[in-house]
Amino acid sequence: MADLLTNEEYKAIAASLDFPRNAFIDGGFRPAISGATFLSSNPATGEQLAEIAACDARDVDLAVAKAREAFDDGRWSRLHPAERKEVLLRLAKLMERDARELAVMESLDAGKTIYDCETVDIPETIHVIRWHAELIDKIYDQVAPASDNHIAMILREAVGVVGLVLPWNFPLLMLAWKIGPALAAGCSVVVKPAAETTLTALRVAELACEAGLPRGVLNIVTGSGSEVGEPLGRHPDVDMVSFTGSTATGRRFLHYSADSNLKEVVLELGGKNPCIVLDDAEDLDAVAAHVVNGAFWNMGQNCSAGSRLIVHRDIQDALMARIQAHAREWIVGDPLDPEVRVGALVSPAHFGKVSAYLEAARSENILMGGNVIREGFIEPTVVQTTRSSKLAVEEIFGPILTLIPVSSFEEAIAVANDTDYGLAASIFTANGKRALRGARMLRAGTVTVNSFGEGDISTPFGGYKQSGFGGRDNGIHAHDQYTQLKTIWLDLTDHSDTVID
Image 1: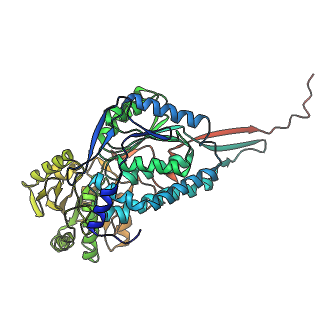
Image 2: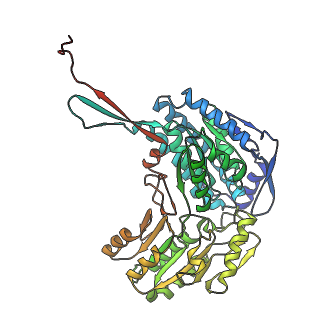
Image 3: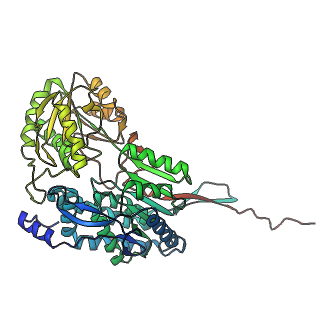
């Protein structure tokens, strides 16, 4: 990624953008069949960006039919793996060409800081597409052990037509996490972006067409959850759905599957992730930097955010002082200002939800922050509370970190596991055995030691308990959810000497 521009230069790019407005079905843009639209607005300013096609079940039916046609005639699913790889590599190259435009569009649509879009989201999105493209012709099928008279082949076949339902917090990156392995496997896909953040998904579909992806293979159907998400989840000709979002909506997709064709469902859901800092943690200044990043990155709108700080009482004050020092660097303001680290919450509705938690925090012990800067913007906040507090139990999805003091390693692990979720966790300690014991004891899909993070594209990402199940994003394991296993059993018995009377 090139060096960051100035605030004025980013605003000039924003003013020059031509936003996509229609759904992308069968290789081209088209309005909703009903002609209905909804407004896409910049959450930082309230400014209207575009009127987007408000699709419904009829548009879903059309997109699924075109995806099925594309899958069944093999225009993508039966291409040589190397040919699919080349198309996806061209897509990555085109995204690289238009990276700055994508970064500004993402910032405007989601309220995300241009700093994050330029330095993390867009480069990582391109890397994900390229990584899965390179994997296409490097995953081998298998031959199982059998007798001398048999050969047992185990083949991976594309699952078929896939519904991909995206969250609003990382629109481009989550699109890549899903279309990367799904298209690499040979599936045809129907994508439902979040209604709050639709613009960059539509732009990527246009780039995919330019890259040579056959028509019907990638379809983007825009609209609400009730008008698009539910019909997609219930559609009898969709073979599987991969959903990232809230636990409540994830439950609904299980019902949709049960009520229709028992399609496979992969869920990556919420989190209330613990960050444990033990009394022997080294370099509290570095620990504080990780804590602040884990809690406030993307305004805390992150399913793997380290939103529960579980810290030993003996170092609580020293760590808190360093957290406050690092948090001062997280400037709240205009997302297109490259100096800003905390932008706008994604929508007025979500701002209202997080503001309610902030109000509840006033009855607790606010150690830092606690203020609404202006409509849509909340400053990084730390609240000391108990393990049973609403703030420590419920997923806030905003820049509010709860701090829970503990007195021992055992208590820290018990508090960390005292949640319905199990997506991610962190533990900071200088003792190697405690680190490994803690990592083994924590009930979470990803555990980081002496750092905050999610691993990288090579490591599977997903959760325990109510944080989801059915598959993993990232890594080779991500391809598993978009393929079926088929066994072909060959009998090689020699019957040439058999005498037939």
